[in-house]
Length: 199
Image 1 (tube, rainbow, N blue to C red):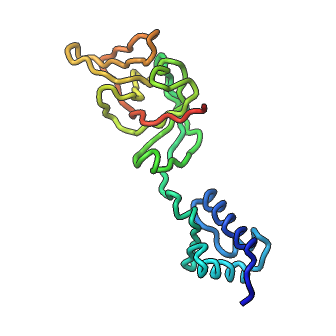
Image 2: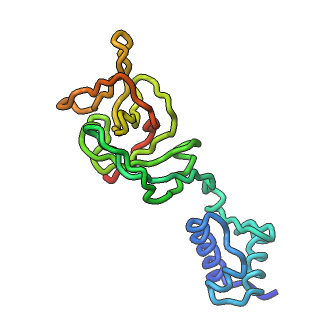
Image 3: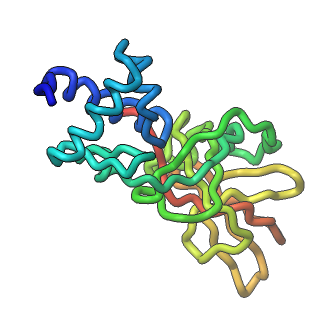
């Protein structure tokens, strides 16, 4: 067998990694051949030779490079559903803008949605206007959690407390210039667990 081109081997590795990052799966040898402008048989022979040399792993279907093996392949499909006010309660925007994949290695497993913060009532908690807030869907919260609370068909992002003596719910803004929202009851839509922001 003729010696293989190291340059083409590197091109195959790079393409496999690029394809994997974009699609979450490895390309077929036919796809590699089409992308790199080589014959299908040539792509297959190169992949087999690269696997024999330990450059990649190939089981006849999927190709893994040392880099793709380290990628955490588990993601959670999550909807970005609009904005949540960090001020006075506002009507919730139910329209799903788009879906994104959240890596479980960073965000954990669960049922999430993402809201865009608007306003400045949560700035002392590190949530600024325009930040993306990852919310774990749940209808209960512990005292001190930052929650998306639905109050009389309006929602708001605040820190959650109970006043057991007065039997009230306190939705506390993390901004010293703003006052608590005190209600008889509210519906918890979820608990904030991460903030994604630009620096």
